Picture 1 (tube, helix red, strand yellow):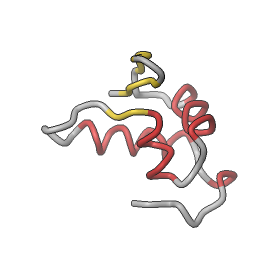
Picture 2 (cartoon, rainbow, N blue to C red):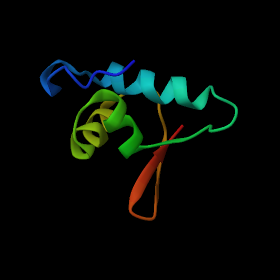
Picture 3 (cartoon, helix red, strand yellow):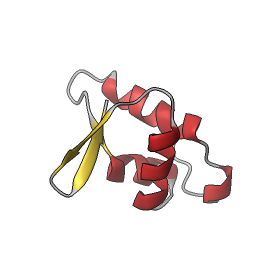
Length: 70
């Protein structure tokens, strides 16, 4: 699911949560970066981070210059 054509006003914390859930269910890559979520949703990294902070499920951890989510 790529939502790059949608404006960020229509993207919700649940959308960000779904990206993390889908990515972590893939055995080869159980964590996803904020940048990867932003790219999949077609929004800025800052917007993705804010959505992920509000989302009910993913846990995050700062790693270097990014945050990873699982």
